[in-house]
Image (cartoon, rainbow, N blue to C red; front, top):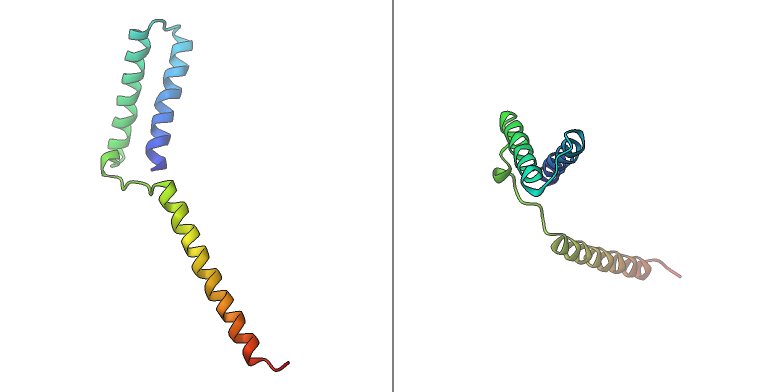
Length: 92
């Protein structure tokens, strides 16, 4: 869900900010900072009663696109048959 993406982005931006502010260098320092920021964001979510692992998964975009196309075809068929029936009933 978008909430988990936003949470991950927040942790990443916090890391980017702190790397510059504190002049962090080297993989261990930056990785440690990133892990700490992820833990902090997760703790904050938990304090608000949000558990990422309990959130429902988002629908796969490809499945969603197929479903929308299928629905569009059904609507087009129904509207086409409606127009055909309407034309049959109207005198010319």
